Length: 269
Image (cartoon, rainbow, N blue to C red; front, side):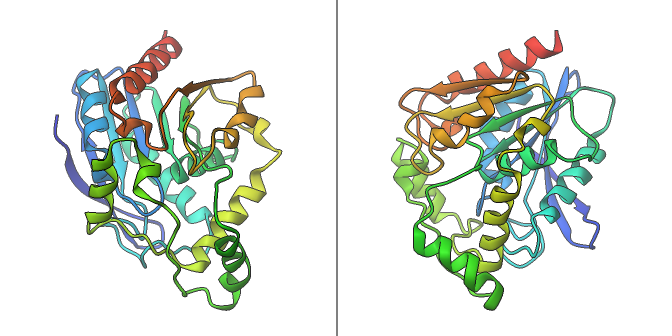
């Protein structure tokens, strides 16, 4: 099932590209929340797979990402991403259970949303949620200090292709993709790091049924980043041996998505 696109207008008037994978007889809706610098088009395979297995799927390009409006990877406040997630969730309402599936930065957005008083979906899937990350000290310091002094300044992130997947084609296609942005602003970096800090030690506010999945060989967002969530009664955590950051883009990606589908179905039952 290939995707179609539409547009939503954010609260501040920004245009957001929204991608849909239709499933007329769906048993639930999945909202995919992508990671930093990428876009929803990189989720075509996962979206199609979920749609073929009985789920209506929606994703969108974050503001400043992909084909959505806004300065490239630049926000004054992380709350802007939560506002957009709330808008997308409101747009899909058809009475079916809703699942928010957030990956990496999208996992931080989803976790933050789940801890907020905003209208909630029925469950969450958090893939390598960026609750902490291996960010070089120079980038971290620059974001914290220069993010306030020179907010529009850009600095290349430290992501490498081999961190994404053990399949070299994934990294090659990532860096060749004209819609991928690898130089966020320092204002974004400051907002990103501040959001990590603001929710730390308060994860018990995440009360919906939640599945955490993580590549055991992920050195971009190391597995220990999601470990604190494993202690919550409403959370199930699964590590996938030998997999790196984008477990949905590994050679055995179907194993990951089938596991997610099995968990969702268990919650629906």
